[in-house]
Length: 235
Image 1 (tube, rainbow, N blue to C red):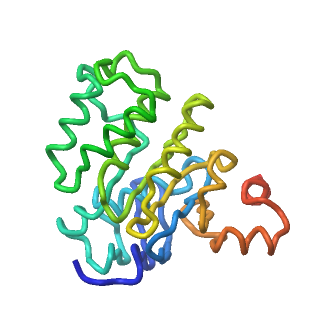
Image 2: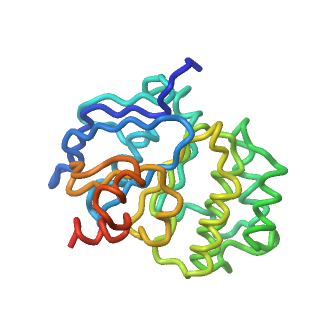
């Protein structure tokens, strides 16, 4: 892996679907060791951006570098991506999901997975089909945080889940995020639940960035919380 001061650099990224232009020249640069909020309403392009970075979608233009690497198998190995869509096998137990995932990744940390399993209050013998949406969201987070991947992408991890699961996920991120080694992007429109996590934010609207910067600087500049600023921008 080549040395780079930036965990992620995106330059003029564009992506078009048959009926909509999802990304219209997005550019961002994320320093190592920070948590960024990718904020915007549904349909703003957040998921498309994360999927392009994760190597799951081919952009129509622009450039992506992950830790100085262009899109490649080597770059994908540096990323832990948690999609909004639930891809868990419902017939598996929680333990089987963890073991199944561990087999794919050399950076899997079994001890960390065990600690997170206990913290998230999940029964390892419970079947995925018996878990609530909030419990499945907790399990998906474990699959990312139990790895040592330098770049973690969480796509709408709080969508439609109960308050107790939201609180537990936020606390789990705070406890396990390795700021000296990792960088994280959290895509969400649940800003009030996550604002405390963000070092910086990007406001994405209909495929374009209309505001980005250090979270504390934005609070000082506008005299309001990121959540209130979000409500004002997307009112």
